[in-house]
Image (cartoon, rainbow, N blue to C red):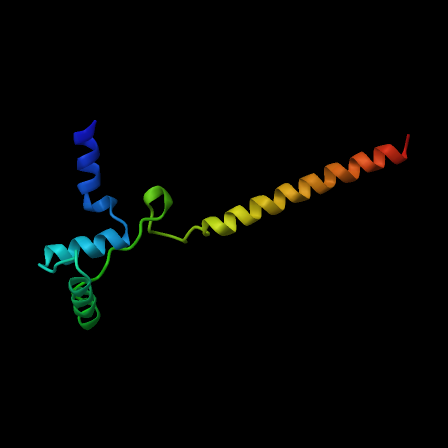
Length: 101
């Protein structure tokens, strides 16, 4: 299990933007454990952005084609609004039943 976890953590396809940035810096020979090394790497990346392009984040379900999916915040807001609307209708129906007794 430990070996499997180590393989997953070392797989560049699982890296986020920050880890990719630091891994590429180390690969290019910069000392990413010191502030000076990181600053030097940042300057290098800013000076040559075409040479050091960070990978695009993978969208849910692994698709980059077609339309982009709405952000999770937007999806959560829609669900919350839908729940609130259902709750409001339930309360309205309950109040209506009370008045009709």
